[in-house]
Amino acid sequence: MAPTVAAEATAAAAAAAAKQQHTGKAAALAARDASGHLAPLTITRRSTGDDDVAIKILYCGICHSDLHSIKNEWNNAMYPVVPGHEIAGVVTEVGKSVTKFKAGDRVGVGCMVNSCQSCDSCDEGFENHCRGIIFTYNSVDRDGTITYGGYSSNVVVHERFVVRFPDAMPLDQGAPLLCAGITVYSPMKYHGLNVPGKHVGVLGLGGLGHVAVKFAKAFGMKVTVISSSPAKRQEAMERLGADAFIVSKNADEIKAAAATMDGIINTVSANMSMAPYMGLLKPNGKMIMIGLPVKPLEIPPFDLIMGNKTLAGSCIGGMRDTQEMIDVAAKHGVTADIEVVGAEYVNEAMERLAKADVRYRFVIDIGNTLKSSE
Image (cartoon, rainbow, N blue to C red; front, side):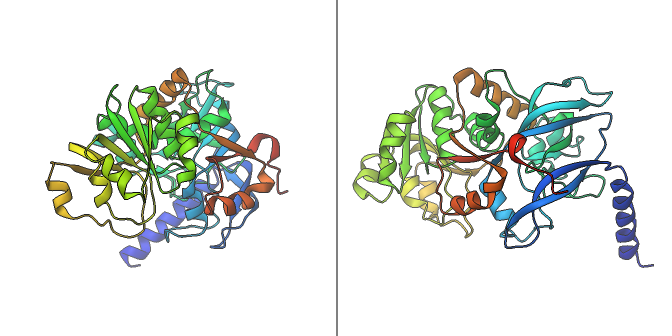
């Protein structure tokens, strides 16, 4: 047998053996093809291992990544796909080696459920940078099985990747923070955009942007929202507390704000020229990308060199930072603005999400509305 064939056979055998350890069942919503239509499916979950935490899922946020994944827009879908990486619920069982959690605890699970746990990144608390990261869904787990996400009734996760919810944090409003929250919190922390009195721009006011505004205000910063939609001015300033608002298509407003910002959190996934926005930065200012445009970025080198400016990216955060983020959010009353929907409404929610017709995150009431397919 050729080495490649032998390796594939060994992997298949290991996955088959692992499935025998998946003795638990869960109700789920799954996409079976690139239509992205979500329908009931009964899935299996592994037995609770020594280091595992078993969780009854009560809420799961809907992230734009879920929409990309179920429609295979990133060309990596392994159907059936059970999406969901903004999971909130309660602990039902823990393994004998678990020390941080007990049955009844209010917990959450974000974008990842495992990593190698031994590389430099993992040792430093940045599991999100591990080359062996295992995502919460549509990923190959360490036992060779495919991970299924939070559009399901329960999940079993290694305790390292479970976050404790403070009593002050509502589960439904807190669930989206496990993706949107850490996605904006981490770059603000590591790029010095959490200092009182500094001026940060938030480019795009949606699921990520509205949380970025709330964290920035909690840090005591001056916040300017930059949006293509003039209709969001009142929302940004009166309800979310932004100090200023710029219509990105208004050249006069852009010019008036030139060289005033210490940093910009760019949440936009649409393709656009970076030049006008780099001009908003002070010398040594930073633009941090957390949106994912499909096409390569357009930016003249002079816009970086003149003023010693930085264009950087950021991808979620490690588990230590995720717990810290939830604790800070609870302390300052930072939650996601949500629309709670039933499991039966999830396909309509996806259609609305594709049209940006939500303020600002959908959250599925898993505990009360997800029914078994059997």
